[in-house]
Image (cartoon, rainbow, N blue to C red; front, side):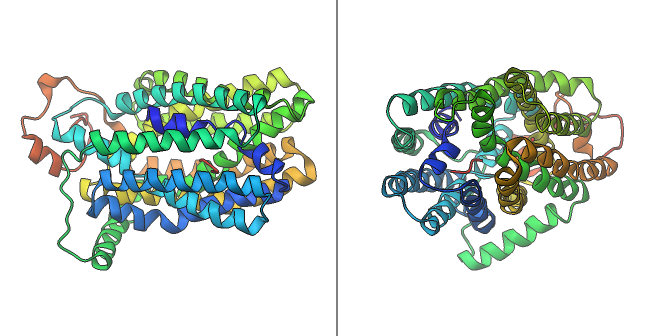
Length: 433
């Protein structure tokens, strides 16, 4: 988490400015981001199958290598002032790199926790990951903005590629699949069909999972636009289009908010009996912030609202991920999580060009307001998931003394983490590059 986020965040503060500096319009810049999410949409399921049939470690290594190569290609396109079609192709390949991560890393972690007989809450683990990722994002986004200010907008991409190469070596030496044995008895095509069918069953075929996943196009799809639009939005309010360190402030704010939200997430979760209450609160708060960003014109008030949006998103993420993971069997975990990411990517493909065009016509404030309106559509789906009363909705951390005595091997095959309450019978982001 530390290495990956540090590498990725070097460009998060300047990515949109980088694309605009390459000669693209707002529409073309966010269309390039949409091609990135289209790449994720296309490759999510095949790469999820790689994680579920070949191994989570193999998927991670493939993703790291792919991202290192495509990041260098992105930098070359900027050097060459390449036409839009070239940006579209490389953006799709960047999407391929990230799909090797989505689902695989969470599945790798949860399987290892189950195999080592962990009985605590997943929110606490994902919250810690959020804190580590936020610290890495804070360092990377600030350094990326400073490096761009001192050199040029391409240098953060070069640094990112270098860190990815280091992470490839580290993961090859230290990362191992624990609690998961890949099933390689079938050929790749049959394995794809088998895992995909099971993923449909445990994903769209499972009502509480399905409704939560159907909220993703409106939350994740809008979220990736907002993240990158905040860079030029702050510059617009600041009044200096070349103040790259101010652009990096957006990413730094969100990284700091990520640390705060990760620390608060387990505490907020304890305030509510049900996980969907936390998810609903974060969703509604995000909508309110985006609508407010659409109408205010004061720089420092916008900064405060961006921080609030980041905290709400960071509180939601660990709970969202824990809720999904507790409803998915191990063998299909990576693919179902990838399918959730796929739906979010689908929303990004549709909404980013629309919102980019809105920014071209009416300004970034107008695009923020429209983003808030689109996000409202996620609320009914969260409510529908809540209405299913899934056991995972009321799971909490339990003491080791009260946990099951099953072996780690049996635990690994049992499905959801054994942390449910015993009383009631009732049933969590993109980058553009």
